[in-house]
Image: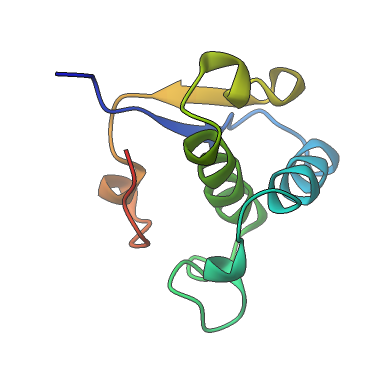
Length: 92
């Protein structure tokens, strides 16, 4: 059985990197889930929205480690991010 993994933004990533990651990831993935009133809008914080976008991209591209690099601002985790507050869709 393959291990479940997710891609999230590193807590140390700056806002500029997070915005760039969101724009890049959302050019490939459907990021409507964190639009206002979307299932992942809350918590309404840049790092959370960037993490959702980065994970959608990572999942869409086959969960390859290089698809979570984002110029060093991405982090592959083994724990479902929803367990730490995010309640959006779970893809693994």
